Structure formats: C-alpha cells, structure tokens
Image 1: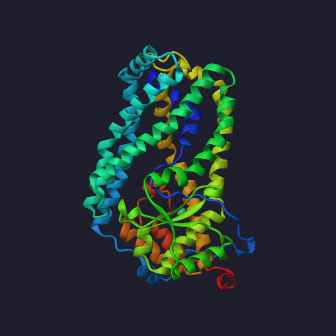
Image 2: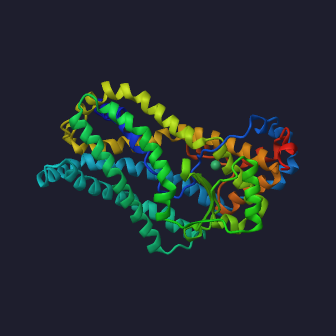
Image 3: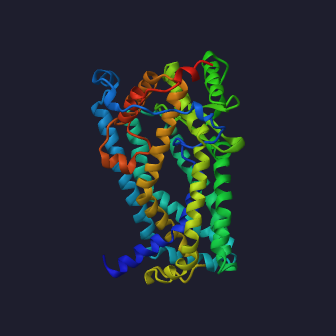
Amino acid sequence: MSHRSFRTAACILLLLYIFCNLKCLPAYSQSPSATSQATPLPSSQMLAVTSSTASVPATSLQAFMPRVSPATLRYSHIKYVVYFLQSGFEILAAYLFLQLGLAKALRTRAERNTGSLFGQLLIFVPVFYVFIFLARLPLNFYSSFWLEHSMHLSDQPFWSWFEERLKFLALNIATELPLWLLLFFSLKRLPKAWPYLIFGVSLPLIVLAVFAAPIVFDPVFNDFTLMPKSLLRDHINALATKAGLSDAAIYISNHSKQSKKINAYVTGIGASARIVLWDTTVQKLPEDEVLAILAHELGHHVLSHINCGCVIAALFSLCMLPFNLYCTPALVRRLPRAWQIHDLTDIALIPVVVLASFTVSFLGDPIINSYSRRIEHEADAYGLELTGNGPAMARLFVALSEQNLSEPDPSKFIEFWYFSHPSLKERIQFALSKRIDGASSNSKN
Ligand SMILES: [Zn+2]
C-alpha cells in the first residue's frame, strides 16, 4: 500500500466516531429488527440447553431438511454477490465524489449562495445524497425489484417500488440534515469540546430513533393493524401472557404489497415497542408455526435485545471519545490535498464521513453479524422454551428456507460475513435437538 493510500485509509478509519453516531439513525428499511425490550421471565423459566445435534437421529433431521431447489441456490448466491458489489459501489461512489472534485465544487457553490451554515447544508446534503442514491440505483433495482419479480417473490408494481425508494431518500435527507447541522455547529462553536457534545447526544438520539421507527417511519411504507379477534389471536395472547407480556402490542403489517416472503420482527422501545407479523406469515403458515415465530420475537422482547443494542452503541461511542478528541483533527489535516478540505468545519467533509461510514460498516459486518447471530440464537432458545414445540419451530425454518428461497446451509465464509441469523440448517438442528428441562411445567398455563 502506498503512503498516500495508507494515509487515506487511516483517515477513513479514524473518522469512525462521527460515522458511528450517524449510523445509529432510524432504520427505514423493512428488514426485520432483531431487538426489543420487555419484562424478563423468572430465571427458573429460562431455557436450559442440554443437548447436541449429534444426539438427533439422522432420519429425524432428514425429515425436516428443506428442499434446496436450483432457484433457491441461484437466488441466494445472487444475493451474496449483490451484497459485496453494492458495498463496493457505495464506497467507490463516495470516493469518486471527493476525488473528482465534486465535493469541493459543491461546497464552494453552497458558500457562494449563502453565508448561513443551515443554508449551505441545505444545498450540499441533498445533492450529495441524490448522487449516492443514483449510484446505488441500478444494483438496487436489479436486486430488490427485477430479481424478486423474476423469482416470483414479489408482484409490486414498478412505480410503487420506485416511490418507496424516493420516500426512503427523502426520509434520509430530512432526518440526517439536522444531525449534520448539529455536528458542524458544534465543530464551529466548540472547537475543543465538540466530541463531548456529540458523545452526550448520541445515546438520546439512538433511543429517539429506535422509539420513532415504528410509529413515525415504518408507517410511511406499510399499514399496521392490531390483530383482529380470532382463535389465533387468543392463542397468541396466551403465549404472550405466558412470557409475562400480556399487554404486548402485536401488529399485522401489509408487507404482501412488497413481498411474498414470510417474516416477523420486533421494533421500538418503551411505549412504541411492538411485535409485527407480516400478513404473508399469518396467511401462509399453520398456527403452530405462527406461534413458533411469535415465540422467537417474544424472546427478543423478554431478553431486552433492543436495550442491549443501545447500550453497546453508547459504550462504543464512549470508547471513541478520547480517540476523537486527540486524533480526528490531525487526520483531517492529512486528507488528500486534491479533496481540498480546509479543516474540521468544512462541509466538504461530509462525503469523507460517509465514505468512512460505508467502509467501516462493510468491514464491521462480520462483527455485527456475529453478535446478531448470538442474540438470534438466544431468541430461538427462548421461543423453544416457551412453546415446547421443537417440530413446529423446525417446520417454520423449513418454510423460511423454501418460501423465501433462502439457502439453508451456506458456506462458512458467507455465514461469517453476511448472515445476521444462524443458518437455517443449524436452527433446524437446534429446534430438533434440544431437550428442554422443565418445559412441561412452563408450557401448560
Ligand atoms: Zn430474531
């Protein structure tokens, strides 16, 4: 690596602190959230894991293994490639915005137009975000529209899909613009103390974003209704009550307008916390499998996974505080001259922060996904304890593989880098192999 490349890479990595705070923005995507909070079960009701998969007869496992069709392999493998390509495109797009002189030209234009910081950001941020949006668009169209339709996983009309992308862009700009304003305002007014301010507001902003996600942002894309009266709802309520969450908010979303896949997730914090079942899940799965997926989500709730995520983000922010105090100003001075970034208060620094965000986010995915797989396993274990119905949970995972065209047994590298959940093969084995101590006494209330 040349000295220049090393310098650039170092600058990118050492801007981690700023990026980290910005990465904690509301999640507008409809991907499942894997975090929650609620009242824990008494410890006596927690799962006691006792067995290994070696104890499961091979015939039992084979009976529950999903059918891996050529379509499943093709779809899954394309998704892996798209993930790596998309990550590379994002990094390249932000880099080119700097290297081609677009950042400095846009900064100069904004400064000529207005002397106010807010006015300058109002020009710079939307233009830069639209640039990144357009750079992402071709691959985004291929993977989330064309591929989904060609695999019969969606029948969403193109304009509906495109409208959602535009809404996503608008929400990104609307919510991140105030954050950029706060950052540059503190950089200008508090040149020595700005890291303390950024650290001080990071946790409240994270909590606010998580709180607002289900009640402000998610409804922009989908409708959410409380589950209507039915036998299934009675059984769901009974399961939630058994988990100590008799007042849990359980919603049905109309995700069928976007996808034919099945899924569920937990989201929100405090008063906004809820479990969401996609309408496709309720329509396509038998009752015991719906209860199995719900029990998994209740596990996230009971085990306070959302709260844990917020605490981890805050701790990371705290760890980065001294680094940011002593290293970031020097790093900004060492950025490539061609980028013409004057100092820390230069708004042309925004693409650098975003470039750092994309890069570290991609490189950090294995760590984040490793943690995610752990809490997903904990939720599986809790759900299994709650229902005491391993075969139903195993059939649920078979359905997730076959209906969502998800490869049940990916390569170790792909699982390590890309998978936020344990492989479905592992989850099936776990569901079938666990002996649950005391399950009978916990499951008949
Ligand atoms: Zn989960």
